[in-house]
Length: 510
Image (tube, rainbow, N blue to C red; front, top):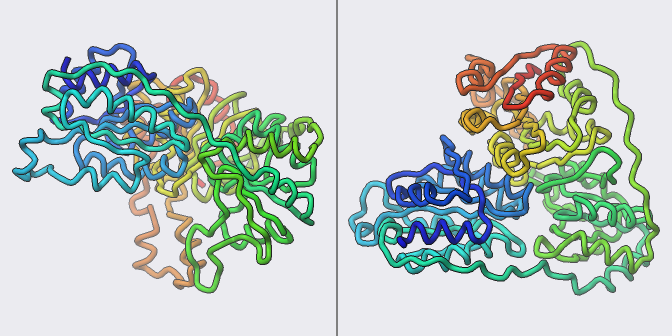
């Protein structure tokens, strides 16, 4: 058995079922090995950022890692932005990167780079299988490391000669450790009882069931329950308890936390501003408030909330009632009108992959009373996540409808996603908000005190001249698409397309 077969077969034994790939010459023996392993479904992505973003979405919906197959250092760098987002989501991914043969590297061929150094900033774990005999054991180690706790990006580098040489062997899966348990629950419970206005900021599995039920009990016991602005995944809509989401802008977060004298975190860290602004604070804990932590992403925040609710003898809390469905919107198409349509027509148990940037600020609250769904957030701030993440979610949960919400600028980063959606016939409906502007940067221009946009600045913020034609782009990739400019048209077309299987796109001109 060669090293490539040992690696791929070991991954399959561990439980890997999906590979998002953009391979090159150094990975050809891995491509051949995937051909011989029917348990792993391989999907070609036309850009590495699509492969890595898809692995992130897959992990968020399944809790298991997919494999990406990337070509040398430049291939990794093309996928790094969405691996940054995956790192911030603590999503388990396994990234196999081919390298030059060990005896070839010293020649400094054009694609040679220090891949080990490049991946370390985004890695939860990294190693090199320098010989065929290393491939199986290190594949098993990569799988276990990706799951943590807390979980994250595992990188396994395989030189070409280790892939094609004989001497590889299948390795057994390793035992997987469980999440850590907080050690200070009694201290936190006492602090809550003594506080005037206690609050707890949660992330991780506290934002899906049964974690939300435990969060609702704490809310009933007088604890303000909040969630991160951008969490990996949140179950919401229907009758699910809805924590109060921290706003994006720092001053709004401080207003939300006003009067809090005890701020606890579970599954996350204490809040900070996304950026530094002149004359404004970077740390967002209210002045004078006590800070306590039940642990970061290495703990099960759901289990921590359950134990805390029991210690506080918090009452059992019924699920929140669903809100009434809004009326059909009409008039000019705005993000608010899109929000009303989503609240009206989201399919039960669908998945939202959100990369809508400014539009998403109103879409999230507008859908609080929609049918039950999972919302996948933009965790790391690197735009271009929504379309690839929807691919991974659709592959990981093929029985569920996926809806991608994307700004037009963000979607252009990974527009190649459309081709993979069409080729794999994935059940995704895409909404592209065509405001033809990097609107968030217009807002930030003012917030940073940089001044008013003149001609040169506007040329860097505008997406017009020429305007992007999303209908033509989608159709060129094999995806059916329509353009809407009025609210009533969007409401009709969304209801029609979301009921259809397969990939579709709506360009929402807002």
